Image 1: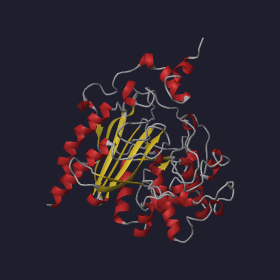
Image 2: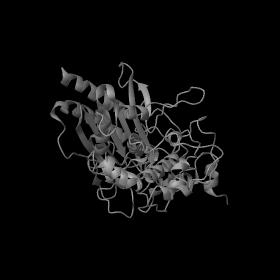
Image 3: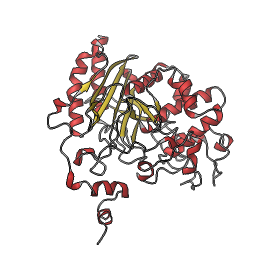
Image 4: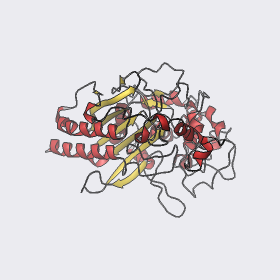
Length: 424
């Protein structure tokens, strides 16, 4: 008898892990997690929204509930910062479907590659102190990383121009059970692989490249990636709910993580049960491996807007898109997507900075609109949440993180109009 996974693979260009999930669940598809009435999606707040923005919050809540229902998302948490302060933080839906544990603003989610701009901030601090030359061969700092056919620099790694491969497929992370204490420990996952191209000639989104950036930080700082990040970035910005995603750790308020039952779309036929608790991503420190909350991410974004931690010229360097040899812009700086877009119907084009992350059991979007002083972070506990972050593959190439990300767009437009009214 023909293996059903093989039969399915002829029609679905998906990795085996995803095919198996689909093959075993088509006959047991569930209905909407929250029923057919979006207004029934539960929500939790810790503090009331800022009074000046209450009308904007009341207008946004039904849209968020509809978004959760349409995407069949287990849970979603979001936060909005305007004019230097967090004005709204709320959790929607379930942190655990079976137990019906609600999402709160303190619920910790996997933020995936939204860790990259946070890691970039650590790099910026070392660069400002004259300790890290971004254009020196990476072996100057991590001599254990094998030399390749061409030299590789930290700048190229941070801009996804180094030719380091991305994940081979979903299984590489979905079934990872290995633990890494440091970023350096994770290098042997890819260190012996050939570069995909001569650095600087092409763009290839590579979380593994950022794991090597984490190892550079460890070498220059002479301590673990997480210890340096904690002291120099997380503590100064009061990001108290951002920690290492370690299954063996003592993390509290950690959501359960879910995987789409219908291949790569949670809204198609629901979600699988929670992913095994021992699923690891500690071996991609620097690229990911962090749990956080939208409130912490908004605090981080506001600090970038206000010029805290980094000098203005350093942040500008990180947020300036790199170019390929032919002068083509990648749309990506050093840890930041950069996009010229409008945030609302009929509005003028503005520059938006941010990042997205699709992890095993989570999807996250961080959006910063400097012109309006707005920062938005939203995260959910299922992979491939459509219209929250546009990555449809783990580690996929660059796509506009904001243009097709409907929830941050709606919220940015809503709060930009609210802030304009406040200023009047």
